[in-house]
Length: 327
Image (cartoon, rainbow, N blue to C red; front, side, top):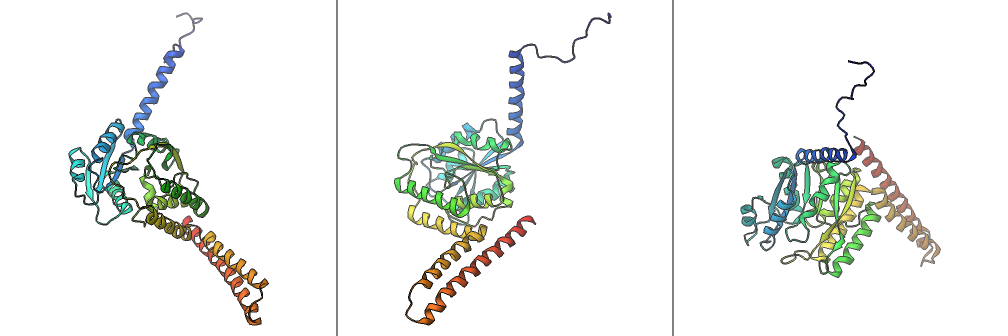
């Protein structure tokens, strides 16, 4: 062979730009397919007398999850309208919760999904058609791509008219503000019931709530261990069937849980806030003319000493939590 004739580069298949784009597209599709099959996704749906909608939800989940390794887990609260039978007939795995409440059902599902079904990614969803299962891939993808540990669906991005009563909208805004100030959560829709997260997060979250406050508790516990939390837009539709949400009662419980979480997760802020209040009261009492000289001398200093002790207590608990977190 003539030495002056250059040999073609081996395995050089990039003939033109069109073929190159097609080749890269095939590689990308195969990579995505491999990601889908590598991580089992379990969709956990709590139900209680949802016969009108559960069949539609199951069918929509099956349609949306083509190409994924997934399981659909129904956690039924002993429905009396045949909800569990409808789900079974449509191929869903059905288990029954021993306790009561929305949060208890989800926690029961999380444990079974991880230990019994081998879940790597857990997805929360309601059985009343308020959430569209077509958005599940949008929640799961950032986790598969390593961009997030928890993905929350933001209902306010595409909420249909009549999907959420006015009082619920106000309540959600109040809870969002409280969560930001008290817990440091930068999440717009803190009460969204459609979210996905790595199953390994369960090892780091101390979930105690058995009712609606579980949604806030999950975010706070995940944030406390520096989990990457992002939001994606989803739609929100009017529910099918009767609502089980009690805005005033459930809102009060969520606020109570937020205070407890603030005590557990941000003790310095919790005790510091109370201490600041007592300190201000002490200073005001010092400037006021009290009935007796004794009261004028004692009460202001009692409040100021109490404020100082609370600051110190909060700081000590903060340091203890820091040490435990490092361990």
